[in-house]
Length: 276
Image (cartoon, rainbow, N blue to C red; front, side, top):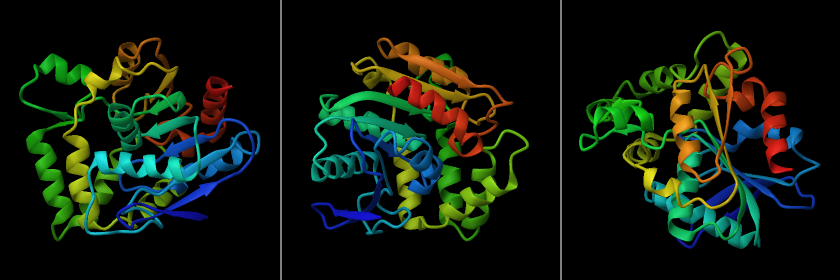
């Protein structure tokens, strides 16, 4: 485990498997940690250099009282790759981690990214009222603005732990190893409500559709039939990225929002083939 310090004094905990070649920087989702990729640190390395990191407010990283927005997380990742001296790298983002890469591309471009992997993240999570219902469905909206406000209020309220656990359970589409579900629930407890709630609101309020056609590097979009994220939304993302590729895991391979935990062998094979 290593650390870098951002310009505003926040400690970011990260792992680096070492090795040669183009490194792969992997970003986790909301409320989760770099431990989500424990099977990739062993399954993709040592043949590939793998770097994982806990976002601010998550896992073993610092938990300041500020900076809980996607743009700030993208800035943190910019500082991480700068301090690690990564002039070129592959990027993988799962769930909110994909949004952080979209923000990274929006602000800093793709000049240092060789290949991009986006895992199970809609281009627009909340069905904002200025878009037509058909557009909302195509972009993969999971709930409307009122639903987002209700969820955030619940997470910030006295029953926050119960609301959080219910939210996580909704990400599993069927029978799953109870150990995987327990692991996910345990990891999410590392993110305090003062960090998680404003970040979730900011994350879900974003609309990244105007970024997709500006991604000018090879991109792979991964979806799961058993996830709460509709695979059609992943097809939407892949079709709007020039030359974008799509891979959807069927239910019998991965039945949740967490394919890298449920079936790491299958997930690693897909990612490794794309990056090789």
